[in-house]
Length: 145
View (cartoon, rainbow, N blue to C red):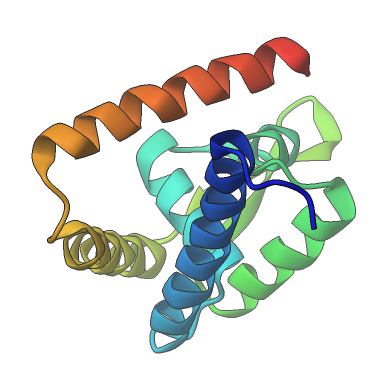
């Protein structure tokens, strides 16, 4: 077994925390009739407004075929509408419905409660230090991409 350096431990714990958080959040939004991907899409649309499929796929960092299936599901639930773009028959704007906005607000409340629950025992100073470490890591990842 390789020596567990702080670098190894940090990356391992970061990955583990990320997976566990996704799993926990997914379980909670299921109670609202959503998946993690659908919840993220609704929150993004509620925040950014109308986007086309390509912009939405880029924001969510998913491929087009996955995006199409995701939007199909949201549309069947009455949470979004696809609207034609004038001058481009192939392009579609994605518009969140009133029902979708209500659900996005519920997802936001759920997310806020989950964050508070998870971080309740973390000292604010330690949390601020961790944020700086993660920002540094993200910058480096972007540089290497």
